[in-house]
Image 1 (cartoon, one colour):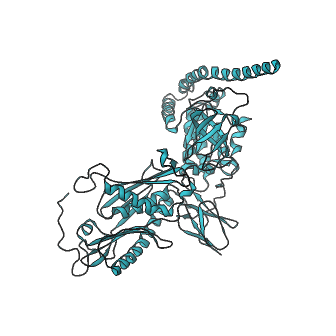
Image 2: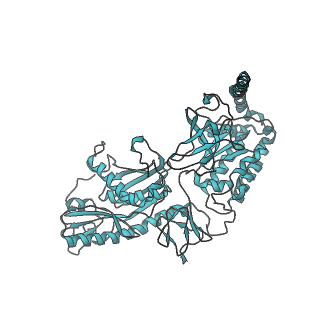
Image 3: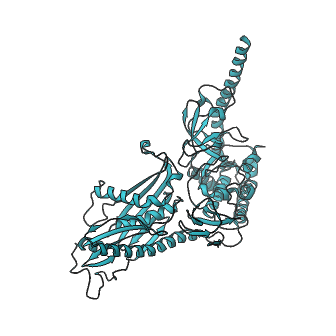
Length: 270
Length: 313
């Protein structure tokens, strides 16, 4: 890894950012669903140089038992950064920052899940940051909500998330690492795209009231776009599993859960 | 009144499915008169009911389901049975044994035994209760268990059992399909076992494609022709030989490949590949039959003593 240098300026005269993006432009984003074989649901996201894996297990039996919630499932989110994910080796012990981000992600995801359908159980979400280049908590939320959907867990909608920041007095969307470090502030947010409700809103640095309102509007717009990418990634992963067209006939498809299950095994007993 | 999806379209959570006087069913939720999908799955309209058929997901018990489970605990009068999914099932001795039964119920079924049972009651707070009073519900003693995704089970059964009956007819195997994604397979030949696994895995991976029954049938018939060309599975099938219970499908991979290698190497020597399992049968008979005898004895003993007691009273 080359030693980090502080860029001379985060915004150039033409109003472009130091990596050439416009102020409201996201980094290139690739999302993929079903990347891990052993997990019940999984997803990966590449957002610029950030690369994150999310795996979902469950609903399953909750251990340790004392965490059991009698009226709903427990959502356990573990956000971890790999030791090699940042230029200076990250110490492998769970840090305060990781615990906080785990909680923040859990709070962002909880409102969309129908947790009351699985009382006493646990839904485990494991998020591993393979490479960090800014915006990991937002990218993690994007990936985690895809992984939850992939695990077949009932949810109100996917949760797109993005950070809006400020550099040299201008609001910019989807901060990279340098903009995060040397910029003036950072507002990560996550929304429910159906209703525009916010499930995550944090702020770092100082913003005026007007700036904050505008930052939120920019974030919501970017989230709408991210939501389209998420839906696309999810549909793509399932149509890939469908080699032939799903639309034709299907007369022999019996998905009724009420199918007479007894028949098959009664016969051989006679 | 409007429906916003094609028949069997892949939908994602939060997608608007219908508006107006429709009824939200499995895999959907409603907000006012709008119905949204809650799952990734195939949307479907039946009458005025909108539902989403899940493509993934863990097993959530329903009353009346046939399930295959492994006993993980014996607690007094209950067996705790792992049927997959988030909830551990309990099987009370009263729902499994004829009374009177011995105080020590582990004499009848013990940890590690695999049972076929029915869900007789389920609520999400207490977990499912099982019963083994129905026909065919018993401890499974040979064959093996294959795990597949529970969401794919309806497809394995097919409309009124069309798929599973077809597989049974062609392969001449015994199967039991649990709604919890476990399939019990018993066959005399490792070749056929391997083929059965291939068929079920094929259904699992291609569950949402059409004309699957026909494709599975073609595949099985071709493979069976190859097998009966080499060995004679029908002949072997006459004498039932048992393969040890194994919790997982992967475990069969080894013997199956062994059989395959031998078969291809030696062509028409049907006896050779079957010899290792045959010795297993002998073992199993040694292992199991005394236990069965004990079971019967204790039951009859019990009744005898009780009749005596009654007489003395």
